[in-house]
Image (cartoon, rainbow, N blue to C red; front, side, top):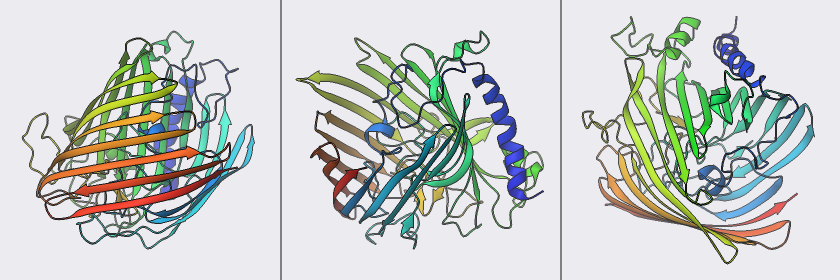
Length: 453
């Protein structure tokens, strides 16, 4: 049996059969809703979170042409419509008739480094991408898919600690339940509306070892009105020259991956993984206020995550003369084990003894764009009016000597974007990125024109 077949059989089939059996308990008359359509009756707040406000994960059909943009060694707390220093990005739905959906995404982007700051890794030489491409087979319980897409797992506005929407898209196959629906079964009713995603992907931009896999699993549920919970896990596994046997995969999934325990050595260590949970609690009239956060373990102890990186924030929203105004304050500690115990040395976050290029895809971090060994406090405003949107995020923090993005010492940043609808099909926008550490100041501008098909 081939390695990829072993991977699919060992991971996807058992996980998907379990989740699909739960999902089948839901009303079969509720056909899965497209992921890019609002889930108005689901109980999830479709307007909250980085996935809908600060990044553009599931886009409508159209094309974007941009000029300028941030370099690869500049944190993209505000993800540019065209990644990097300008180019083109397009998406077209070719088939959308049950049970099939086929979307083709293609783009060209110039992503470079400023050379003024220490990038975690040099940018990829590739310019073309298939961002947004997707083939999905839908059934009442969910959908099987093969895609080149980005994911944002977590409630944070400035970034997810485990899989962030500012990271490059990942080619993967998997099964997901894109629409939050509650099961009428008394056994599973306590979950409330829930969604899930289980996938296997191949990471690019790695040389030591080449071609590692990324396995991701996420369950998001709403057991109580106003409370959303998420469980997420990501495992870098295998790669050229590494053990890719079913036993190695099983050890990784069971958390038997620490050298010196359970017969694990440097030669048969399954890989590198992160796991944790997140929450979002809303209250007040119309659920105007929210307290949210995420804890992700960079290590394992007793088969549970440990050495946590931490994020927490408060959010409020108002309606002013027909416009929606959101404000948030967020704190992030990206030094593993620092916030909760302070017992771990720096230099752990998003790094691995097995994977020398770290927790990256195509040279960019898969986790929070500020990188490891940074503490960051951010405040932001999002103004949404009938024909436009304005976003501003100001950040200040501290970088340790082992920081992946900044020189040691104080750091500050400001990200902003503004866009306006010219008509039903056209949109103009501009973005600003500005960061300063103890050594260098970086800035970038991007202007874009979007045409909706």
